[in-house]
Length: 74
Length: 260
Image 1 (cartoon, rainbow over the protein chains, first blue to last red):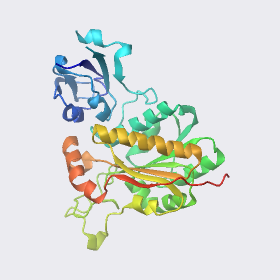
Image 2: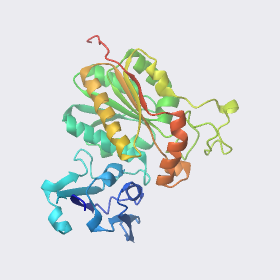
Image 3: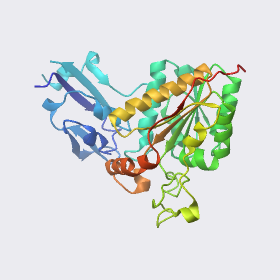
Image 4: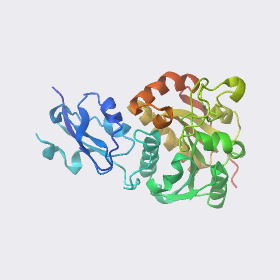
């Protein structure tokens, strides 16, 4: 059982859909949305909210700084 | 526990620093420039030197850097960023001055300015983004292009008989007496990003302390120029670029500096 629970908030308008965060996520819980943002990119979204531990790996590798990560200790 | 219970200011782990403006960046998706801009902004915020830092933007992909980092910026002619930074730092010695340059800017057209600024030991930090290609103009061969690497102007791969060898300019600069800190970093993985940020902070601190020129090279990707997806470009870089441009500190000395 994970000791932390986290969540990711995506600034969907800033996301360019490069998928670097999808590859960086150690829990493999990020994926691309079916929807497009105003620039026509498929933005990233959290596919499994329960599994996120708030490690912020996605935030570090994001070139466009569009991810905000929150975390609580359980 | 739902996402609403977690999203509270006290639980914040990571977010965009306020020193980065809200302007969307013009870089291609997955470009290393974004991460490096972010790291420089974070370093400036953590050191609390936003009002004391002056950046010099290059010509190249990062030509609009002044739109994204909320500090004083000066745009330089192609390759002349170290010369401009020299003047700024000499006129305002209490400021932290850095240049942000690509490999075409620093290692091709600006080689003379770079080498002489480093040789004079100007108290500036040079952030050098090496992606082995001219990204902005459509992926032409740069001095740093790897042997056998295909670009728009060498479609059969770089032939060293015709075009010479990849230029390891950081190693060259490390030989000069004026430089105090020369390092080679990358920003493709979390651990590398953390190390790169430490290097940026050290370089900016050296500029403030007047220890000499600091050069931080970032081995990075140009997924559009290399015609790969961002993730594949990272893998290609690990496989090919790191063999020619190995990561790590090339020079780190405490240099006694003559007060101007």
